[in-house]
Amino acid sequence: MTCGHCEGAISSELSELPGVTSVTAVAATGRVTVVSEAPLDETAVREAVDEAGYELVGQA
View 1 (cartoon, rainbow, N blue to C red):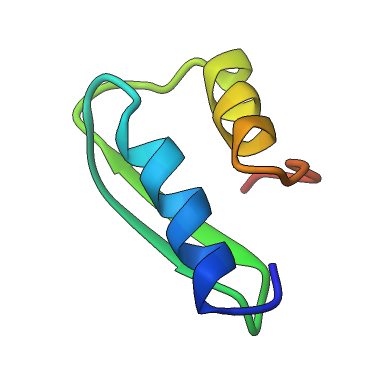
View 2: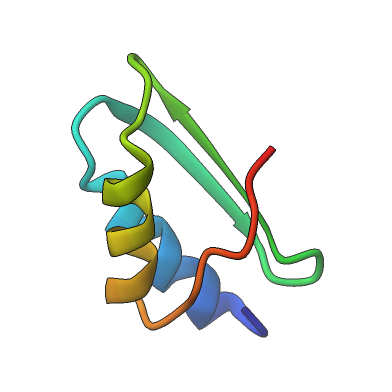
């Protein structure tokens, strides 16, 4: 991620996942925080990030 457009693309795709209540993407740090009502399926998260045109490289 390098700009606000990138942040929006990632946020939009991840927001569509079932149970997601909020997404915060910060291009300056490359960090994305997802809040969900239930555990997220890692494969679904990776696919959403891929769909936005990016690659998930780690998770905390």
